[in-house]
Length: 103
Image (tube, rainbow, N blue to C red):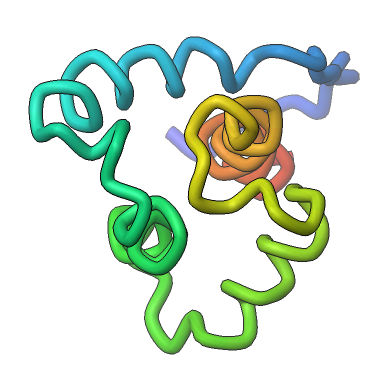
């Protein structure tokens, strides 16, 4: 109707909220396709895959920012060491960014 009232909003974020998205991604895509042990995919293809999944075009520079800010040197390529960074990235992509955009 267009007749809206301004109301206060309470907004917050949790540290491990990306773990849900990671578990779905792992169980429905990574593990069934054997990508959990594919070091080439994990090192060179995983972050670009996530960018494409989020419909981020021309992501080359952004890919390096993600790598530098969410992973320690040497982690990319080993899924076990990547989990914490992936959970953080997925939390930003799937929960925080859309919520901040809404607010």
